[in-house]
Amino acid sequence: MLCNLHKHGKKHILTDDFCFKCRRFLPLTLTDMRSLPVLCVLLLPWCIVGLEPATDGKTEEQLLNSCLDGMHHKQVPGPEGSLYQNCAPWKDRACCRANVTEKMHQEELFPYNFQWHHCGQLSPQCERHFMQDMCFYECSPNLGPWLVKIHMKIRNERFVNVPLCVSDCNQWWEACKDDMTCSGNWGKGWNWTSGVNECPRGNQCKTFKKYFGDATNFCQKIWDGSFTVVPDTEPCMTQWFNGLNPNNAVARKRAKEIVQASAGELSATVSYVLLGVGVFLGRLL
Image (spheres, rainbow, N blue to C red):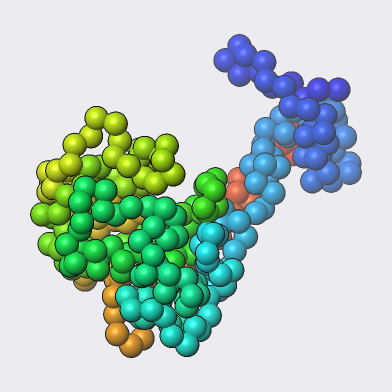
């Protein structure tokens, strides 16, 4: 028997396996197979979602104690004792290892063969901000709530729309706006034929200001949407701090929102299923 659905004159087929998966949620007395297709539709959210939260079942604490799944990242954050130079703020709880941060500062193309100086040498102040940004990427233990799955040789996850404080963004921009680049998005589009990123074919070296225009556009596009710029009065991340990590509170707030939203979605799904069962029972009476 196939569970046949008709909608707008088109025939949609659900397999026997799907129908019987749905059927196992029914009281045993409801055995009218002619009505089963209707119930399949009513129970569709239940059967597909399987009552799994939208955040892959992660709890708040799991979101707050995970590292980006990357080539050099730890699985979970922990203390390092000391980290090198621009990565030092993360030493008490880091997703990076000390030897990695040292090589980052000493070997120009480590760790991903990515050349910042593709249009001539960056100024020291601009290079320092990009190094702080790399330390944030490698070391931050606060990115769990913003991670999404991807498939790359160097990583299986990336972060998207992390709220970056506008003051951080403005400092980064002021340090780099007069330096040279040949791309308005460092996250993709490079020519990698030599094994090192080179300017996309046809692109010319121009100032960051020519490519990005302003600070917000720069911070939000430089790494293909990794950051979104927000006022300092809102919960936002910083790439440099002294003492306690202020990003902990930002991540916890977002983790709570994700878990609460997932619980709300689950509650709505259950309500929909119960309503559907009620309608189905009404048809049998």
